[in-house]
Image (cartoon, rainbow, N blue to C red; front, side, top):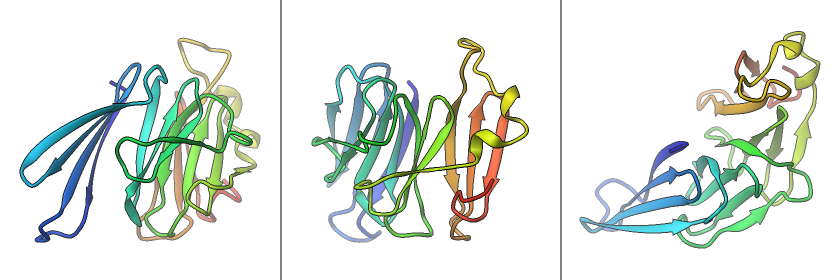
Amino acid sequence: MNEVLENQAGKAGEEHVVTRIYAAMANELLVASRRNGGWQTKRGLAGSSPQSVAADPSRPEVAYCGTFDRGLWRSADGEGSWERVGEDVLRDPVMAVAGCTAEHGVVYAGTEPSAVYRSEDSGETWRELGGLRELPSEPEWSFPPRPETDHVRWISTDPNAAGCIYVAIEACGLVRSSDAGETW
C-alpha cells in the first residue's frame, strides 16, 4: 500500500455525512465510503500504480490521485469516476499530490524527476514552479533503488499561512516556500 487518506464530506451532526478512505494499492485505488452506518468499497484506476491521494479541502467530494505511469487523475464525485488532468504539462510519474487548505481550488503535484506543479483552478490548468532544481542541495538528492533519479515524495501546505508549502524529496531533501513555490 502506497498511501491511505481519510476524508469527510458534510458537517458533523448532519444526516448525510460521508466518510471516505482512499487506499493507494500497488495496482489500483480502493475507495471505502461510509454512509448511514454502512460501508461500500469501490475499486478504480486499475493497473495505474497509484502513488498519492489527496482530497480538495474546499470541496471534499473532489479527490486527486497521482500514479506512477498514468499521470494525475481527478474525481469530481470522490468515488468512482476519474478523469486525467494535467496531461499536457505534468510528466510521469506523479508521486505526490496535495490540496491547499488556505487557498480555494489550489492543488500541488510533485513528479519524478523532482518538480512541483501548481493548479489554481482545481486541476484544469497547471504550471511548473521553477527554482527547485537550482537549490544547492539538489546534487545530493537520489532515490536509492534508482540512484540516477530523485522525486518529490510528499507535499504539505500550511493551513494557517497562505502560500506556505513544504516539499519532501526522497531521499535527502526537505524544502520550504513561503510564496507558493515562487522561491524555495
